[in-house]
Image 1 (tube, rainbow, N blue to C red):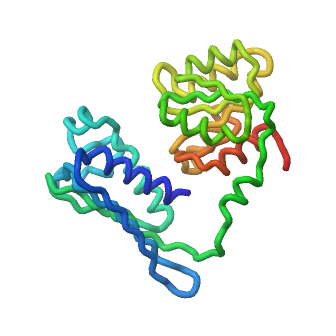
Image 2: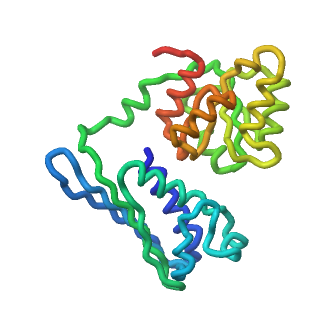
Length: 255
């Protein structure tokens, strides 16, 4: 899951900074003894590229190559900082080679234990949701709302949408929801502020299950969400099995 998160971040950046040309992903695995392997993933693009000075601060938190990149392409650069930290925690690394106007190539290397194959579909279907569940999804990005709607469509649950924390707060105070899926980074009111405000409402809102949706997946960050009043956490990018399991756990459903 963590490698998937890093790969999607690198692919997102490659697409963002490549107006035309190509993006190539290469994956290889080399044995490291009987039960270990070295996984290598490279993401190469023919985009804008970076200078040596830009590369020097590329992985700094909230830092981008320069102001013009932030104005043109958006973003804070936090994704790369998180990606590198995740790989370091797994004993791996991220490196990059780049030249202005000639694109960039990011390489991820990490040693992993070799395990038996897992049937993903069987694992994901192990949790079934009650079709009577009424869920509110607070998410500002249209593509993420569409994705989560598609992930929950087959379960048959009733799904409503809010585009920011303030809308979510208003909707919770006016309607009877069984659970809230709350994005963290949203305009007007962020997910943490909205959750704290919901907890101050009277009645069942004090115990209403609220699940945080965030790319912040380090143990300390998840513990902080619990202290902020969340009932659970699902990391981005969303895995349907993890999503269903978190919803069932928050609702105390057993299968």
